[in-house]
Image (tube, rainbow, N blue to C red; front, side, top):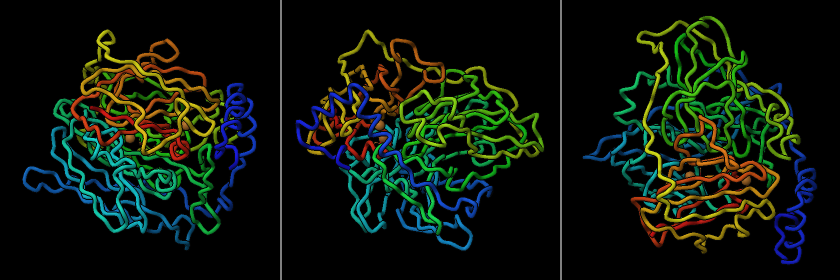
Length: 492
Ligand code: C2O
Ligand code: CU
Ligand code: CU
């Protein structure tokens, strides 16, 4: 692609000028949003029972909780009688859910049987940079990488996925991703659902294009691949039998590029209780929940009056068509589409029947105690941040250990970008000068920054210093990240 691969300085300058006007992007958008729709969708197998990723608690070896993951190829049957080549951790697609307690000394042995190098990144976890699994922790084919760290994070839902320089999008699209559930004593005392697969349901929501033979079609579109078939936990628009009581869903927007605007088909209210890196202070009532790539949300939904009824989790994407200039180009984004059908069955014993009034206390960082402020400008042309495209040999920011910083992220492009920072969890201070919505007032590691918007974040960079190994910050639209919208920081 000439436009995005341009390296000549004068071309870049003129592209930059054009892009400030928004013209270039509009032109480029219309050229490259030509999609490869899934061909014969009538043959795809839909409506299967929602698969629940296997729960792994690890083996206690001495004081360590040890997990083993193998990155491997597999096949799935998405068109009857056809084998779809896929990849997964310990299975054909996605990976097991790893459960651990705050304070655990965890070992994860990751064996790469993919036939090519990759990495595995622990998204959202606060750990030493050498254990982060980013682009610098390459796992060569046939090798095992041993990650060892202590769980310092709050109880929440995190995830893992490949992060090889330039290859993240392709590897994730092929099926590589899985969840972590961190538990802690404080939240274990709360009266909220926690029976995995019964009233505590993980939902990894993704999208793909399919070829006629059932194989995944990865067009590699540089603006971001948004497929036209929705998969939840690796199955196409599946069905969940949920008990007639309060049910907790842990949602991961795990697409390469698609942003979801979740809600229920009957417009019912639900309650967000958790963000990327912890629980909220109290449940926040919602009817819509915007979730961009990499973000997680925990919600409670009350099905107690719905026995033997059906309700669908959908994405009311068309309601958000003003998000960016790209939205109108995608046929899913201008519609409302199904994600999951919930069939409500009889309640279980010991059902949670009441909504908790409060959840946790968030130790908010003090804005008057800030050591440093930085600004980051997101630019679409050549996928840059502050004018620079990712270079693994360049450190962009150096941060002092234990400093509290404000990061001001400004989106200078015509497309919304989910901005993600490794190592830390942050709090959103303002969006264009205003306080964020109630459901964004918890710990986060991804924030969607809309065109021309400025988001201010606060975070503390504690515990782990390493002048030799950087952490990443980047757009979590995986094609943008691979295209260069990523930078590196060290904590010293
Ligand atoms: Cu979810 Cu740098 O990654
Ligand atoms: Cu990450
Ligand atoms: Cu982006």
